[in-house]
Image 1 (tube, one colour):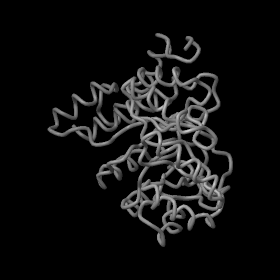
Image 2: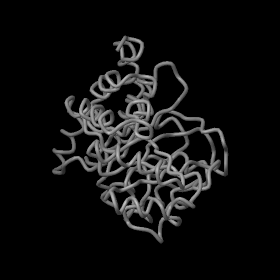
Image 3: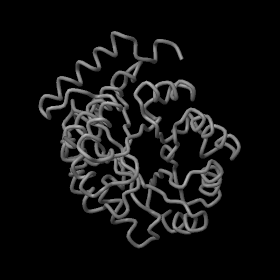
Image 4: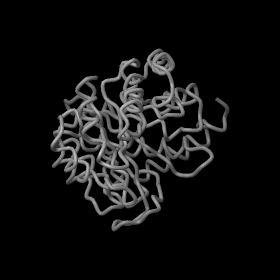
Length: 295
């Protein structure tokens, strides 16, 4: 990967400085994974929240570039977008090989980018064959309409896979996490939520409240911030975590309160040639917040 898609020294210092500006509010002087873990251990607890990255954040990079960035930001868990693993139209061997590359680098693939789940058994079955062959136990799904839920219910039972259904904001039928929660209630408990906190917020949702109410089927969380106000704005207006309108202190507090054991993933999608500095700053902000809460 070239310097264009990495953190050079100047950018790294900028990220550290910008993140530090947010930390006096919570009294935390450090932001790296090692320092955060040290702070938490001093408080007598192990790290309480698993942080990962949705590789959609780095969609334009090749697999090797994504691995390099994850090492830079000290993240060891990832959900893989379709540009990195061809879940819907690839082969089991192709998907398995990509996951192995991450595993060899010490990074666990915990889920997928959003896999569309239409009411078409052949299409869904092909994707699930790839997910299972790659060794995953959970994947992220997207429904244009809820009429495919009976089919999804049938197949997750057969494949014994958990699916985290993604809410996608005010332009979709399942706009909020609570919309997903209500839709999946009649079905097998392997069908749960991937709560996108910013998309839900844009549709008027309080993400912290949803985390508490939906804890039993909360299988994935996408952490991102937005400058779009609630009430149905269509433009996602993505922002670095901590620079937008979401109350991340309440979101993180809710995840800790319910003892959330799955992965909370940064999904940074601001339109920039190089998303690495913004992603790194988002990671640092949340790590600092976690260290402050553990102190």
